[in-house]
Amino acid sequence: EVQLVESGGGLVQAGGSLRLSCAASGFTIDDYTIGWFRQAPGKEREGVSCISSSDGSTYYADSVKGRFTISYDNAKNTVCLQMNSLKPEDTAAYYCGATTTVGPPRGDPDEYDYWGQGTQVTVSS
Image 1 (cartoon, rainbow, N blue to C red):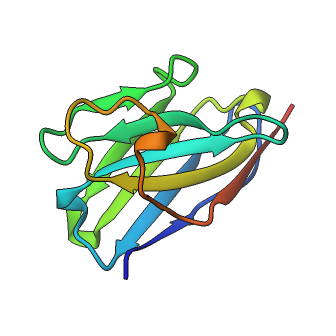
Image 2 (spheres, rainbow, N blue to C red; image 1 turned 90 degrees about the horizontal axis):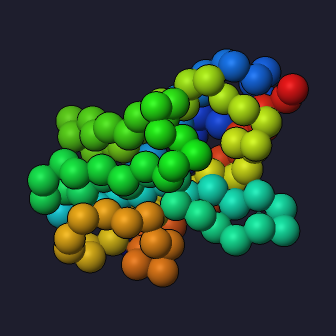
């Protein structure tokens, strides 16, 4: 059974950092593209950052470029999202997703087949 479990969310002040982890089980992340998405109340789910298993290419939303970094930890079958210089507008529930869609990752949630249950990130001003 494919499972994704997010961890690392929490409450942080603006300018602070958090590191999210997405632990995969039931499959090997080497065979998938893994993405991080977020959804704030009343808003649609949006792509934050994704990493392709085939070539390591990445996608970052313009709003997080230079502040967030996505990475694989193959030994742990985990994908991490390092979030620095957090802003109040980063507040949302963060989800990781997995897809076998090939090609450059684009951060489109419709392409993702499997989802975790999410972890809340709250950034106070």
